Length: 166
Length: 283
Image (cartoon, rainbow over all chains, first blue to last red):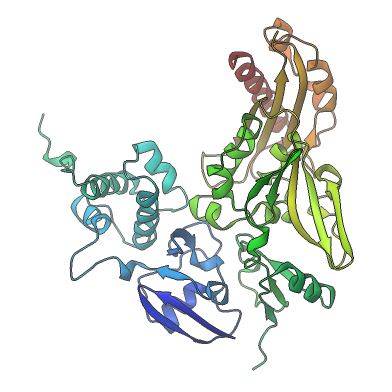
């Protein structure tokens, strides 16, 4: 079956076995291996990409079902060598440990901040509930998203906890 | 290499005519489709109905709300709906995580017919019906009759669910949904309780609907409890002692990895009492 879609602004497509999952298409056909496969059961969220503006788990979408869609993966975030504010937040606030969940976490956070540009801590935690971190590094992930949220509103992010002296 | 049959119709008529002519597995949001097939090759022919935009969205007529079959949980969560739908919207916010809410559809939840389906108890309290279409015509079945058993539904050959219909009866009623799991998010329920309770201006309960999920093969309304609540004042002290164990006699919870049957009985009582207290405090 033939499909045509946009991934990170680039028109891609071609003939495809209908059973191909979107995550396999992205990784194996497009060689965009930043999107990770974790559980393949839609629990872990490592495969999260943004499809037509909404974060979805690309292990539960058929590539043919994404025909005509506009997809954004982790590789599409940085522009001209500048990290996206969420990527910068993960860097600045140590939002990653082993890094396996990171692309999915970042894409879920980007989706969240597009809907709500000033989420509370609770709203952030709710927003990433579909993403699991096996290192359990959620605390700094939340701090990273708070950093990004401030940056994207044009505000100065709160100092890192380790920079605050009693 | 033989390709698996895959068809993605773009309108309902062509979907129904394809569906009438062959044995297809229907794919909508896909959130249960793939997880149920991990480790197995996909061999069945797939009818992907996710492109049927006419089945997406919520509309309202003089006597009913019509929720299109492909309406996603994220859309229900964000929809401008009257208070009686609060329970459904709370459930929508607890179906999986955000990504699952962005893909999973209301009809998929009903057709999957899990005893622990989050959408079912609130829809039972809304007296929802299921609209079905086939090439032969259309029929509307009450949700309670559509769900015939554990993962069993009354879907005839060639039929697709096209909408969920909610009659406009008690739109301003108090409505609540509670889901108990081993953690807050991304979890299969141990017990769910949905309530819709309407009271007249004096505070007398005119209509009470209480549904319990994950405690029987199909989620159930507790009709005996509902009739006992009717006619009582919202501040009646008797409400504090309802329900009791005998109100749950029709439930048949199982012992499994998530909880024991006894625990489920106890948790159900607690969740219903909590909902009744919220109702009493809602005026």
